[in-house]
Picture 1 (spheres, one colour):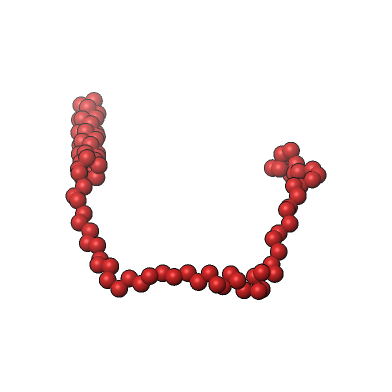
Picture 2 (tube, rainbow, N blue to C red):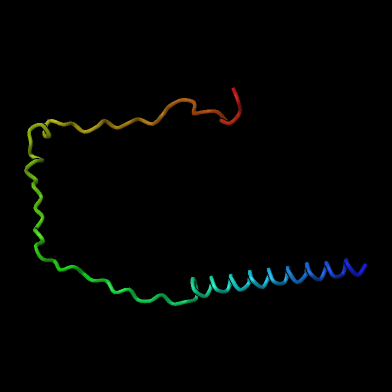
Length: 91
């Protein structure tokens, strides 16, 4: 029976090593990814040289073709039976 105790101790040593490695890896990931303050990022704003003024030409809306357009009629709500009680049942 001493062989069984030795094998159990070896298994326990491996399990302890694995658990400690998982804790260390988790701690490193949390330290560098979550708890560490981010470094400030300096952004350079490009100079606004040569920016043109935007002009909108509203005279296009005075086109006679656009004046002839009519608005849509009001759509009436659906009348009649709507679907089945349980749509997932086969026909």
